[in-house]
Length: 336
Image (cartoon, rainbow, N blue to C red):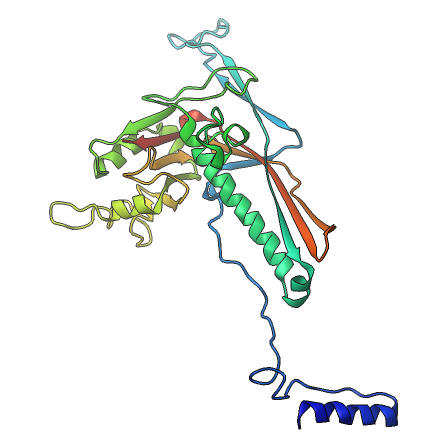
């Protein structure tokens, strides 16, 4: 039956019975194929969230600044600690503390959405919010690795002086050392033990040298892991021995993954890191629970602003975070 006939019949029924309903979903003129369009639940493509959170120490704060204190030095006499007589702080060096302080940084966004779209598409508001939080996670990851909080001229995309203190911004040295002591933004810039590649291309011996540089007391830490860009992992998979077999086929592997583990420790693909051949620090090896601390404000602010613009709502989201190398001796990195 044509749509106009259905409507006329419903009018007649309403006049006779007092009410009527008309179902047009099968009418050929309703759309090109008949019926109506039903939306599936909306979704967002999966983002690569911050992989540093896999093993890093994570704490919360209610402050706008976070302070860190480390006990350094030795109390015992390194020459002769034995005997019954009391020996007060005779270590070399003696017991001391190092202190530094960092501000908690803010990342936020405002997203306008048509109210009509929200009413039509199922799950859209939840999808937008969850994807926005994942977007924040990708932004914080890039800042935690590559931002220089001492410079606002070259690193504004990762925050500059308003961003986090990136791992790559810490100076390099043959041995690790804590930075200067104090509450200024220039304090706590530690020196990270860094190994230089032997040649322009990464080699097996570079991995061995990097592993050997990490102090042995950290090797049994359950958070021990390598972080590498996926292209760096590819370069290691392509390393071959004199018989043209992959070097990392079985050496140090677990569960049959090629470069899934190296020397018994997992390899974490981290796309926010430099990649071998086109970056400064393509590999980090660390006991991450001791090496890196991520400080989160416990409240992530998400607000829905209904009256900001006719026909739209605005979703405001804000996240506050801070990060620092805490135990500088617990991690090493490769450069070239």
